[in-house]
Length: 84
Image 1 (cartoon, helix red, strand yellow):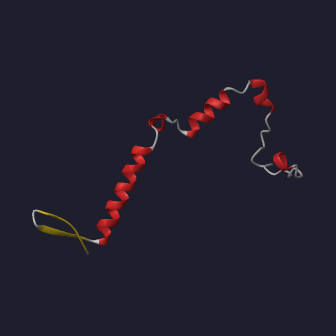
Image 2 (cartoon, rainbow, N blue to C red; image 1 turned 30 degrees about the vertical axis):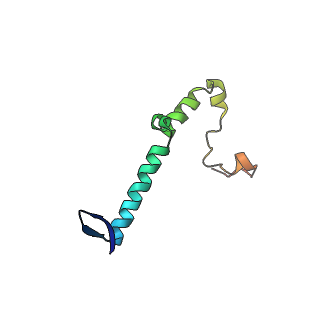
Image 3 (cartoon, rainbow, N blue to C red; image 1 turned 120 degrees about the horizontal axis):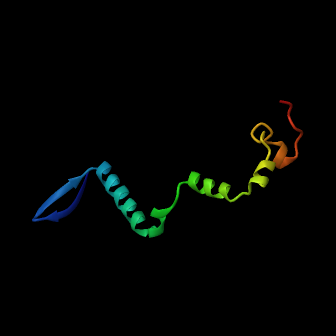
């Protein structure tokens, strides 16, 4: 327990857990005030992905491999294709 400021001649004691909680709360409040206002307008990642995919022409989209997950090592690294 620690003694903190006196009010009206009385001292108040606070536990270590309460001090840690107060410090966490204060740090979170400082972080909230410091971040830019535009961060509240950020879109979820899946919305960004949808917008980017919508920009790809259909002809180019059809050229993408359909077995990308199965052949993960082959496309970026040139490894041999696995058999289905």
